Length: 240
Length: 258
Image 1: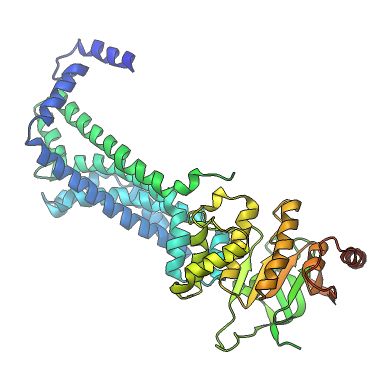
Image 2 (image 1 turned 90 degrees about the vertical axis):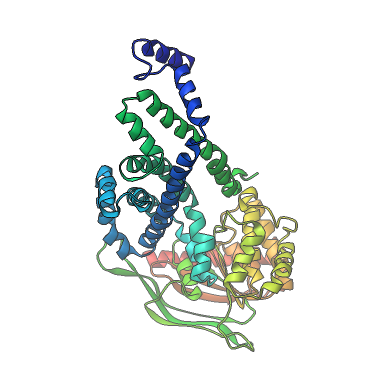
């Protein structure tokens, strides 16, 4: 770790600070972002889009994945369509959504959802294949209704897949949100990056990127992980 | 003579052949009757279609020919409640012991008001009082199977199907569970169809025994065990009976092979 920082410092000596800042210079720039109150509404706006895209992707993706798993015909039918969506270039969605929705709130969220939900669908569909048929039979023997079967038997088995989807979606969402903001939003972190790019200020782009990275890591550590641990508390105690 | 809880006539069940061509019969012209309140065992070698038979009675597998009649509930006339204890516990590991039992109660539309009382009563009965809030993975295999037994009894079934419920346990635990089951039956008496590959287990627990051979499964012997209950597992009369039945069983198997 320290070695890496020293190497970074050494390399940065050969360049202008605006091209490749040293670690300390980067910290100073990050501080300049956070000490300016006008940064917070910008970050807030982006977070809003990331969360909206994330939640929609999870809901849409999980619902489609579940239906694909429970209805074989739907699964075979949608399989290739999901693959098509997965292979379609992300950048095209970012441009297309600006063409379709203009500079609006919908464009970045639409881009995030279209790119992220197929991953969720694939993952959840995979999860439905790993479900234990013995438990479904048990529920059938006791005459469990469909809703009870879903709530207590099927969805709990999908939880590991839902959480891994959430992780992937979260990481993808904010990157995509930033890209699409760069082209199609009035305000946001992506727009800031675009602004500094046009001013050829790599230092400020790095500072914004690093700040956002720290925020996302905090969200992962403070929200996602504790939540996951709670949901899987039944696993941590194994047979005596 | 008490009325029949289950009557099966000329049952046939086909499975697709392993080579993918055509079908073969796992169960062929199988008939049996279970009187209300009786403990009946079906004994046969592993893989002879015993579990399939239970699944057909439970209504989760279709059959290809013959009749399966299950008497409706006394009084209400609605279809009989069926409880099931599987080879493995099949618990929902993400739910507490208590919630596993409530799952069955909810599935059976049993009034919410009596859930707590049922949970307590049947966990007490299987000797697991105080484990309500534990998760299944924290329990030993034997205890997990006790939860599964409590779950099946808690719905107060008219018919209880048991599919080699002790076969996954070590012999000492299994023996204790059989003795405990015998005592439980003094307090709660559903009609029981118990499937096992162990003749000793069958003669110890049951009032009637059906013996099956393989490929296709059919019944070659039906007998009553006329030893009063509760019985001692080491009762010499049980050993004698078992010995004779084993002889008979191998005689039939030999015949089949020829």
